[in-house]
Length: 139
Image (cartoon, rainbow, N blue to C red; front, top):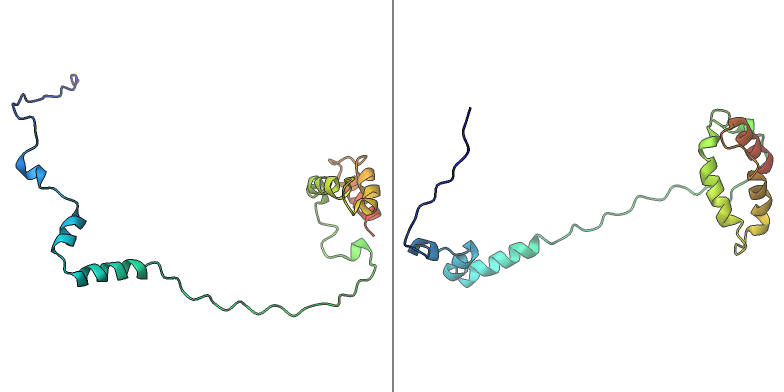
């Protein structure tokens, strides 16, 4: 078993640092004192060159526009992945959106108010009820 750690100090009559410690200077001070002007200009140029940015790359070409779009009524079952989608996971976001879209200050209030009011009676934990809601209010 080890004993307690003891720190030894040495009594000395010197109260100031030795002469070598007084000569310590930051490295840049010695460089600037000994370097000719050309070295200083090179150092400044190197610092500025490190701040340069590469020229911007050309943006990728935009995909061909599908406009004017043609919309047609289809059954929900005709939408790819509709029957496999977990719509109850979208329910919280839909409810938050309803608060904004059906607010009294919103220009879209008349359009969204009926669906948002009906959403209040839907059980969010029932996936069939959520699916039925979307299918009946968004045709």
